[in-house]
Structure formats: structure tokens, C-alpha cells
Length: 97
Image 1: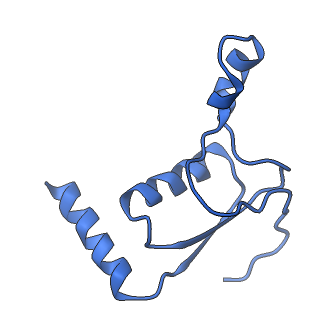
Image 2 (image 1 turned 120 degrees about the horizontal axis):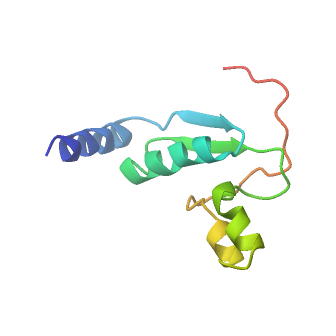
């Protein structure tokens, strides 16, 4: 019940004002998991941009060994369910709030 109320409050807040910008530096598992959770709770709350130096999107590094061993499909590596345009191969060298 409390979680439902919190989600409803966040959703109402998102509708009441312009979306603030959230910039995530690095597309590692922790940062992307946080983005996924934010999108699950309130998909329209933030305008999210992710910068990652790697030339491809985020993947589940924990599952890499089973994929290389042929135990799992390479499609199981994709851990980002977010939509939008990722900024892959974009190294962030300086950021100003």
C-alpha cells in the first residue's frame, strides 16, 4: 500500500512540472539498474541521458561466462530495457550541473 502511494505521488509530480534532466555517466550494471528502476516507478519523471565509453549498450556481465560457455544465448546479455537513444562510445570528460 505504501509503495503504491509513493508511485502515485511520483507520477503526479511528473505531470505537474517539466521533467528534470538526469545524466548518468557510465552504462555499468549499477547505474543502468537504477535507471531501469526509475523507469519502472515513474517512466516520465526524468529526461534521462546515459553516456558510456563502450561502443555498445549495457550488458549483464555476470552472464558473460555462461554465454561464452554456450550455456546461455547472447540475447540474455542485454540488461537494458530502457528506450531511447543510447550515447555509446561517448566518453564524458567534464560535466557541469
